[in-house]
Image 1: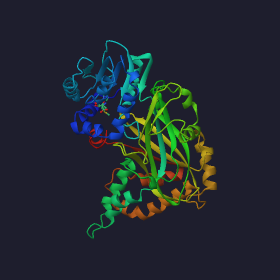
Image 2: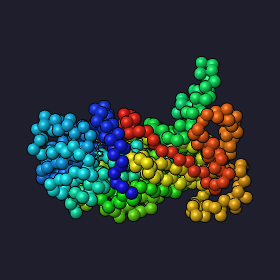
Image 3: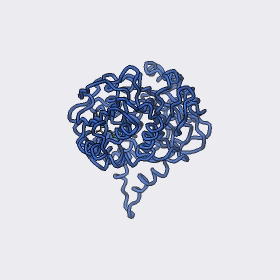
Image 4: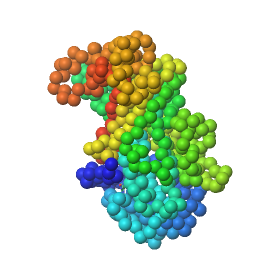
Length: 445
Ligand SMILES: C[S@@+](CC[C@H](N)C(=O)[O-])C[C@H]1O[C@@H](n2cnc3c(N)ncnc32)[C@H](O)[C@@H]1O
């Protein structure tokens, strides 16, 4: 798959980054900017006399940190018109002999030399939205010296089932009675839109229904483009309390641990989660590596971390699922770059009976057996069957209203899911954050 996008997509994308407010939002995101500043200041030896490449320099804040730490040369690459602001900021801070600003796309720039360090703030919602990581990989392959480092060096994505009662009350239930009027047509459209596009919201710890589980982990030094084009993970969540489960939240962390080898990441998701939980790799703290003396930093964006502008991303189920403490929820999460806009991802969730019926090629054969042991609807209590029942009940209740809404060209995802359940042995919900980059950047980075 191509590493860049269509010119129209890129034009729109870089136009959104010409907005001063977007850069103000990012710089004022203290956990974010502090993480970069702290790592650079606490590990200035990595920068002294070194050549640094800042991929997507924006207003130039990371380039300035690097120059301040003693970098010999910093190449600040910024494709948007923010590059001219960056150049002025560099000048007024008297770093024009160290920091060279290029208003070009990273993919097209020609540098005079290879670099020791690549620094970049490329993360989007749920880590990968915007797909800017591909530009960092291009920069790495072309411009990083063999023994060079990337900052951040590692990234992880996590998921957790969540309760969204307050959000649903505010966003949906409100429309049931508006000044005494029935606003259900508004509600139906609002529900339908929510199924197509995840919510980006700050959650609190009470909304988490299980421990977080790892979805994917990337080692920036060695990863390939194909790792982020299309990937999936099967995850078992063990529910911690009786609640309504409305969907799955996804968030990420990035680590500044360039001295840690890839062996850490050969661990299975569960083993790695355990080692993270046991503090083998510190989270949201600075910590000295016993072997290299490097100060490690992790920038976390979970509901328990200090709030960042990335918040958390929540993909909704078609209907709330009642869950009880100790229930196991078997889920397959898939992220695939949208072919028509590589800066977007399609996110799909499948709730499964268990992982024994996980192979897609087996699905057709298992479907028949499955329908025999689990008729639709089924009262066995398994999460998938309970969800199917909830969707059917919701579907029945809403059917009349939907039929009256004949002008709907885009049938709601709920209905699609309810129809699909008759011929699928798993539930598959697609969500993609289809905000155009303008609204994404306005609201978040
Ligand atoms: C998330 S912002 C970070 C800005 C700045 N580094 C900071 O930390 O405040 C990403 C920046 O990278 C720029 N960018 C993204 N992809 C790029 C590419 N391929 N080439 C050049 N600039 C790029 C965007 O225009 C945007 O200004």
